[in-house]
Image (cartoon, rainbow, N blue to C red):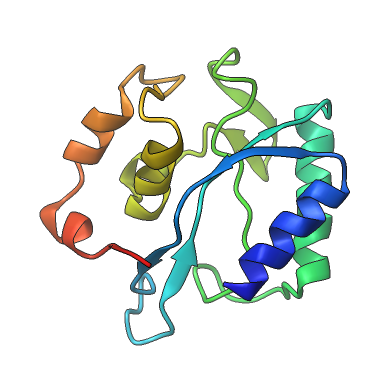
Length: 150
């Protein structure tokens, strides 16, 4: 949780205003639940940065916190994803191969949906137009039972 707080501090230090943040959510590692558990939060921010500049800044923050390259889906010191940008005024933004907004697999991930619902329970997916409550109800029961608020 210290890494999350350090990340939030660095975000604010870069003139990005944090408007709200969720509780901490713990989930088993995926795809290998034998690895250390993941802890996630969602934050809502206000920024004057364009999406590409925000993305670049967040990648720099990940490195400052200690993120190192590793195998896909392996435990990471810090992993920042942009789930939405500009309150869905863009239905789909593809900036480059590394940035797709909304995140393409967010609808399948309990560790994204639960924290996002906590801070924005009226959120709607820009591309599919599904409300967050519907996305959560479409999760498998094992995924719903596998998440824990800390």
